Length: 114
Image (tube, rainbow, N blue to C red; front, side, top):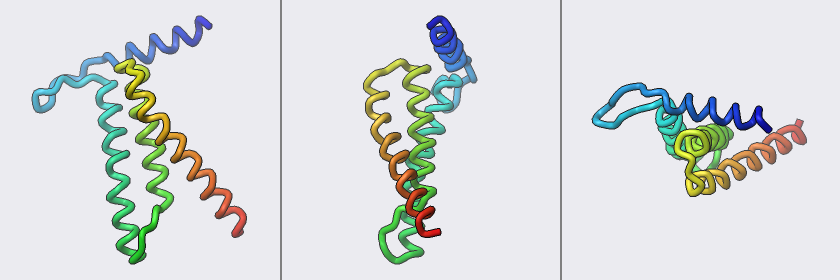
């Protein structure tokens, strides 16, 4: 159990490393990870709209789910180790599980098609 506590404390300390100020916002490593996750999670909609435009019908490409998974994971990292906020954890855990499940279904579908 001590190893998990030590790992948590190390990651929490990493998230607190100051990186300076940007546009009046003080940045640390945890916030940078969180902002990267938010950009990925939000940017997935641009990928979806572009793919739908090309297909002339609503589609969700595989990249959408990978961006959902990565963005959720990074935001979860921020809320667990940087902010320690249970509301943020719960709000991002469900989208992470949905993206993982959809990638699982996509992988099985592609594998069955050969």
